[in-house]
Length: 181
Image 1: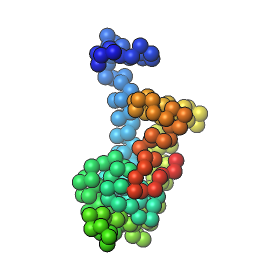
Image 2: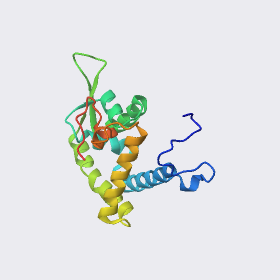
Image 3: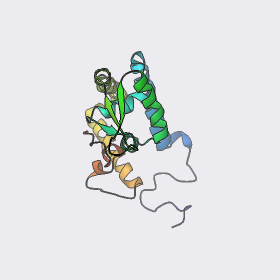
Image 4: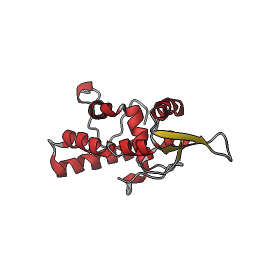
């Protein structure tokens, strides 16, 4: 099979009729951007944008985490994460400390204020997600989630078909403990 020949199984899209308007990737990106905009709007009173609230929330899942481990966990460039962490530290939400045994390793911990603000993130995200899923109902929402997990498995070359949670980004092994779903 060449790069120009799509696989014979499951040819939902056809090159002759393909349009960007109905591209699942584009629709997923538009939904993702809508979720981020709404979450950012609701978390703006706390001075947080996606670049800050996502790592802040992720840190609630562990007592301490390394910069490199967190960057891998949330799938961002360590340099970009460092800029976000600079703002979080400046606002008194996190502490960064060098590991006394290895000065190259930087541990991140939430401050009491960081814990207080991070505790609000799940409430905001639940509301935003529920608004996006409101037209579907519970059963269709679960089908959507299952379908997206299966798309991820297919896109990743069929890894772990019996356990899709094992390849989801938030559960990959790193120096940060695993997120629960």
